[in-house]
Image (cartoon, rainbow, N blue to C red; front, side):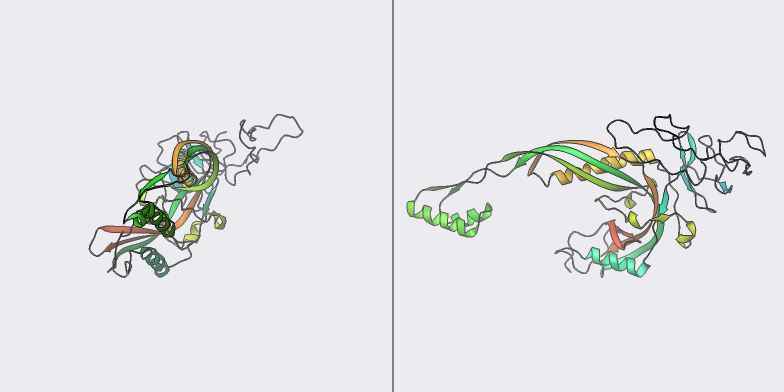
Length: 361
């Protein structure tokens, strides 16, 4: 269709022109399901899921029509409210300052992100620093780390994350259990038994019996058992949507409380800095798959003592964009190098960070 104001071509069903922002008088109706069993789907209606994948529920019609423009454009009108969007160089994920609709620039042009959510910030700076301080002092070899830390920065930002549902089914093979251990007699027989993991009483009894005979004792342990198993794990993996923000990327399986999400509304940020992004959804899905494999391998190693084979199969669902409140705390401990802590402003939990390995004074 063509713009009723400037005459330029725009997507079918667009409410506003991407060039002049003019409102259009005709709005295309959302596609409907087939009218009778076996009828071909209406144009635009979701098709059947590929073989081997679970059937997907039809997606709800988008709240706003999609906006498209040639890749590389530097000036675009928001398809929801008509306000100008002027992305900075390199950004591919833009949030409208007026209505909050997120737009992504992919290889085919600009498109509205339909699933855009946020988490509310529920803590202040004092609470964030307290949560970070408890995390710093965890461990037998850490004392008063928070007390001796010099605070350099404590900044709250709403950071975009792609939340990618990823399931992993993996066939694993490995060994579980140990072999036989030979124990020679002598004055240190009991101590040797303790060192190799036997109980003190069992080792002492074996050594005493051997001393009386002046001979040799063979302590038998279970032989290694070959294990073949299959594991199934699922993760809602967050992938930070801003390049260069590597420290904001959870690396130990942390997940946000997506059950508490609400539709994105910039007014709810309270004026806190809200970041745009430059990581496309497809790239985020690829990175999420690599993280899922890492987490699944870690789970597999709990099943065996020696992991010999790990063959994963992945299945991912479309991701969603989540703006999460993150406190970035930067500090220096006893004049050492700078370190950081990330704190989830919604759950008041540490996402990731750095801390001294040993600090006893």
